[in-house]
Length: 249
Ligand code: GLP
Image (cartoon, rainbow, N blue to C red; front, side, top):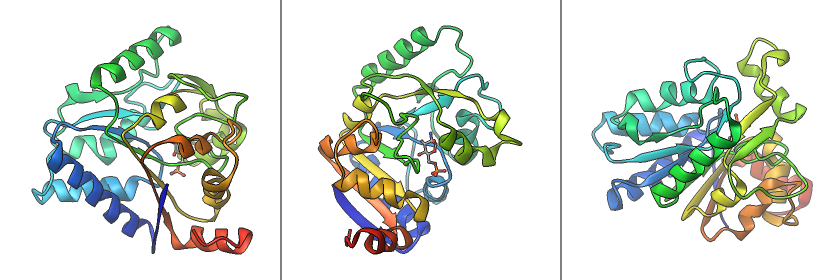
């Protein structure tokens, strides 16, 4: 794992956008694995600006998103598909046919996971997986568990995760209790993983992801087994790790 400490999320976004721009220059039809959440929003904004400036094209790009809430339609303002349309998809020249997303309203969960896994296989894997991390060390919606997941599945969301995401809903009771998610095995199989995290709440999870035991109780720790991982954190998070663990990232 290569760790990069940036001043703030804007600087992280700039560095990550440079990496994605370089990849698309080399492979215009690259497969991008994408997350949602507040951390990647600066990166998506920068990608849109770079597209509008004519410096990047998504014309041949394929995307596959990591997760989607169970029970939310793709037009629901709190669905992850809606988030991606608002933050990236509708602003760039991505072909809608090249977007792979879970269907949150799928009646047969097992069949939906099989469909998603087959689509991922047909893409030939992920060239660059952008990922965030939950304060409990979840990646996508792989929550702390008794074993690592290989393929996509439905995840029961922990109260900590639902609390962290309730800011997007009117109340905790409105936050879905389950979500479709990519499996950890599929995430670490990506040719390149870029993990981004900012702020004190993510410091412990990032520290344990890098230095801790590889355990399904900290799903992100499995990234230690991935071949090519860049971790971008802000100075606040790095300082917290230095204070709490005496470790300079
Ligand atoms: C959600 C998403 C994850 C995301 C995490 C952190 O649980 N399923 O993909 O990485 O939250 O989100 P944020 O960047 O808003 O802290």
